[in-house]
Image 1: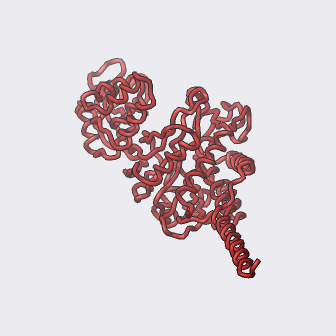
Image 2: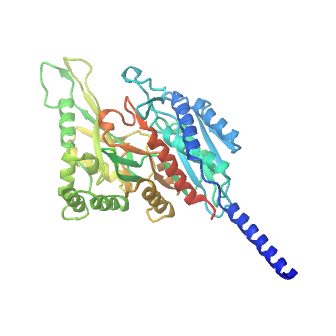
Image 3: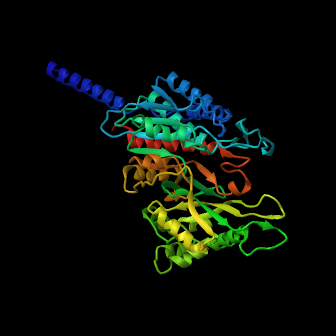
Length: 473
């Protein structure tokens, strides 16, 4: 064989070898899911075992743990604290800067517990029957753990990124946001500024052990407080008075029992009812389609008000009487009685117009209606026509084989502060059995728990979403 042929063959083999090596370098190693699951459970149990009840809100032990785990992996970490015992942990994996960052946010504080009501000690992270029990297992140490595992795995596999991925474990979500998200947004926003944020509030609903649908929170109602103050003449309890303020206050609350503001849909609620109709029984589907019909939505709202209050609350502002203060002894008619309303308005409602609507419904000059102080949230919106939402939908199909419903939460979250700064925020969560909450196994309950298998699937889901949004391709 001629030398030129040998040279050609050798050159071709070397080129193929170099090409194979280059391709291999472009393909990051696949995650070792068995090992990741073992580590996930270890970190998760460690975090649940920290008593970070808020109040008083001592998140420092959990924050120190997270900082040590991240620093051990060589990931740069910063802590920001308005109060020494209430730090916020920020870690960042750098990308090439061609896209704006992705923020992974969770909170380390939890609501308080009554240990006597728990079968398993609330901070034991006990494993029983495939579940992990403990305060924070659903709210929100599952999210913190999933985000932590994504950060560790990205670093270990040296995944090339075209955007920074930021980890934020915040304090104060369950109590005073002053030490958590407000502090970070007002004083250290540059450390967490991002194009997209993934946080809590959405999730996957299972019924009878089968996945039915997933939800992604893209919007939330704004919490306000209203105080009703009835005034009259005090007197002896043995002589009934027509201007008894307790009677006037009670009548005013009765008139507000079915009050609501003008019915109005937005992009999120319109998409929610449209998609929900597509996966529901015939009767339910028609009811959800009625919501989209201006001629039928009022009747649908009345039905929901009686049979499904959570859906009625998506259509308009609502006010719930939650606190009443009246007399101070049995035989004295007081001169004043007060009640507070938990008011939740739509993101585009005008607060003063809603307050005036409540005054008109009260219709009593002896009852003053005014806003009361409250730790409220600013308005903000998140789009559905974004790479992030489309990526979430695709990941839901891959991991859960179901449809995604965008939702407006009636409760408040810390995402509101980020949305007000222009960050597109999406609330996600693991699969939870719909039957759990009524049985006392849900978030904030006395037997809060999560399926281990769904915790692990949630980590995979987060990995799927983050790599799709941030990996350089």
